[in-house]
Length: 264
Image (cartoon, rainbow, N blue to C red; front, side, top):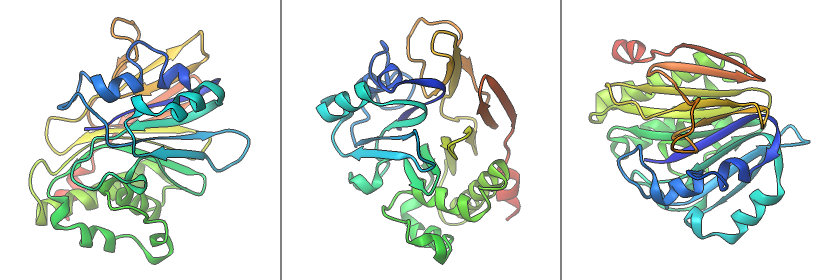
């Protein structure tokens, strides 16, 4: 499974999350400790917000630890809101278009997890993307398709409800045409103003998710794994949760699209 990290708060250099900590995202790309596979080497990406409404985006297919351009970029770019991801493919090709984060307009999105049996119903999943959004379908991942379906479900006006409806549709499709585990996920996404995160699974094995406020940075990191192994203050996000991070504030509400999926 993939690893990811997001940040919201006072502007910092991206390296303070991506590469500098002892268990940074780059380190997790070859030495993850809270997922099935320690290696996440099927590409990486960063989406960051600065002076424009739409995020900047840098993605490549190299392992994150071996790209000198990434090291230089994160040492020079400062942002108060960004998403970073290292990928472990669950079946689709290693290509730039399949690397996270994905962006449409002001929205950015990244995902860790799986939709059970996705390769067997990929065409049906694509058919859930409406025509006005299908031009943004650049890759072949379940993650990108889920993002576009969530946009179609009304992400702009109702982020929690839209994501729940999109997840329910994918879980229902897996239950009908796929296999167990039907859906396991953590995801982070942003409209450039707020940072949102989800932790959910159709069984009892949701991927890990943590958050921590840093007084020294003046911001909050939201991560698959803590950035320092022995650092205090990392709060685990409970399974079945939808989170909103804005400033120093945190709102966590229940996220249970599975009931909708089983009723579909």
